[in-house]
Image (cartoon, rainbow, N blue to C red; front, side, top):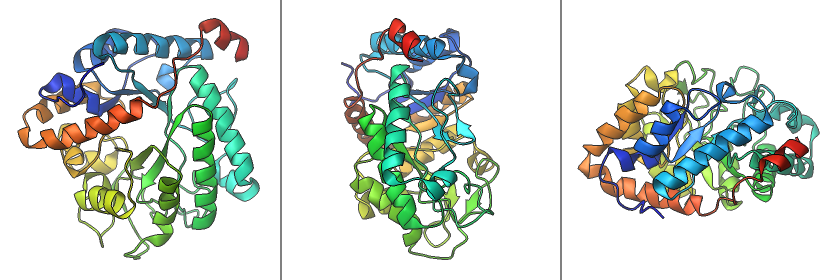
Length: 342
């Protein structure tokens, strides 16, 4: 297998990126990202998804090429939260909004649902679900209101950890999001930098579900493009005080930290994507998410290759990614099985 501990040029730096691809087939751009940039992961969106058989074929082709190019499988992810954020539609299980689950479902029901969702994702070759949402949304003014289990930290923690157990049991790696919690915001970080409004310097209500998720063994945590004035002037995604201090030191998280999309308005209004990737890695992020502009991933890889001082940090990130990939389940079943099941 490839030696992820050696990161010396823009090609191997690509292992630290999860990148979107243009369409539903393995074409020139996708092949270049896998073979030449050697990205560590691919994120899928509606533009990449048609039906179960096509999704299986796409993930099968991507993994085949990645194993030839690097000896390591790809992390293949999407957002299958439920409600308005569900990339794979029917015949896949339709998932209620988290808000509805928070009002009506028990932890046992959430766990069973997550296990079923994970089995369907694994069937078509998706091995990472960017869920559950652990933001403790305070009220309807919060952009995460429908995507959150609710305003009660205990409820969010109980249902969130149930979902984590279900995804893991179903064969998919979950990513809890968005650390350190967007529940007290009124600005959508897709558009601009979100600001923590509660004034609580300890943020115990927001951190509690993440503490429980870490204790439950969540393998990935996604960072928030959130400014907590009491903690740092930088957004959490770009803050060493938050990623190394709060997440690693205080919560004792040892898994992979993945950024939210570095192209979102909260970050893009402050700096170009390559600069954001550099700062996020320096701050402690392990996997750098670029959802649409694959050229920006190339540019970021070239920029990082010039940063000799970042090599120890990059080696640390690569080691965590190697351990994560060792947890991946075997390849998806054959095409006939997928056709019969879905």
